[in-house]
Image 1 (cartoon, helix red, strand yellow):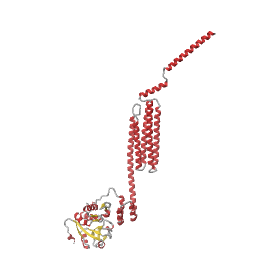
Image 2 (cartoon, helix red, strand yellow):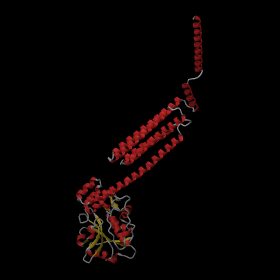
Image 3 (cartoon, rainbow, N blue to C red):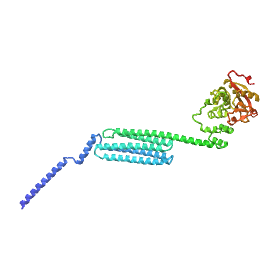
Image 4 (cartoon, rainbow, N blue to C red):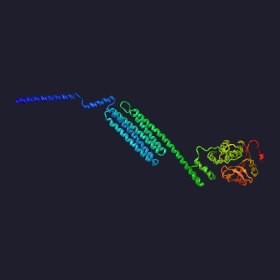
Length: 473
């Protein structure tokens, strides 16, 4: 019994020793091999080292990309805010466009955030190629966000009425494009990094889109200005028609409120026929009208020139408007053009010549000396006409016009005036050219009507050496 127990104990002891040995052998085998988790970590570190970057460096780079994306998204939001503010200025029609563009920009921002999130998730993978692809997508999303923000600003600026709003949104678009370009430049190149050429391509495309939008905006602004000018012309015609219906007193008040020179307004009050000329001071053409009179000049025919003709009435003569003070040069231009058939001395050209010759007297107007001394210089033959009907008839029947200086207080002037007598009929009715009036020119005048208000008269002919004073008396 005891022998059997001893044998059983020995067998149990041997089995325990055998299991202990086997256990030590297995434990020794485990301790001689690295754990599987450590093996994966070492492999990743070796692969990262092979690419020249540790996991910590890759995580830091990813954070840089995320910060760049967030900065560009913030820039896009600022652009959208500027667009909304610009669009709210003009009309409600721009609000719908701003709302639509803002939604699109917000969607673009969400897509960008998704791209960044995908990049962060892909960073957790073990394959290096997947990490590179994730980074490329993040950069592409960043540039796309800036490009979308640029397009949003440009399109909204196109719908906003007004040059100032368009300029503000275009400037914001420029800022967004520059931000996108700077973000692209921040991406480093090298093994395991985003494809630099792709980034540059996206940046170039964004700039190209910006330039295209700038051209489109410029064309739209040009068209808007053209339409505005056409509308202004329509309103201008309407204004003129309305102004032609009101009284001289009302028109004078209106023109003074419009800061039309007082000299012209007073001239209109004295000579109501010139109301259209004075009103048109507000609508002077640019460039000025041509002063060519070649189509109106014929030898032997004395044209009717008005000193308030818009071709020269707004010009200066002796510090005044030619319309106000230019009766002397206008009268001489009528005589010179009709006698010579030449068109080189229109009324304004005659006034410039008169000033050069010293025939303008400040405070008084054109000197009487121009009527004889100036006539000699122009190549005209002249003589002074007596105050009798026979002398006047003799000159006019011979085709020689007479310049008459009219006294203040008569039918023609309250200050002083020159008119031209051109013809006389059998009944003694005299035809005149009054540079201040169409109505007074279209009627005839009797000897008695004219003589009481006439101060002096000079008759003229073209000096070709064949005329003398005795031929007319």
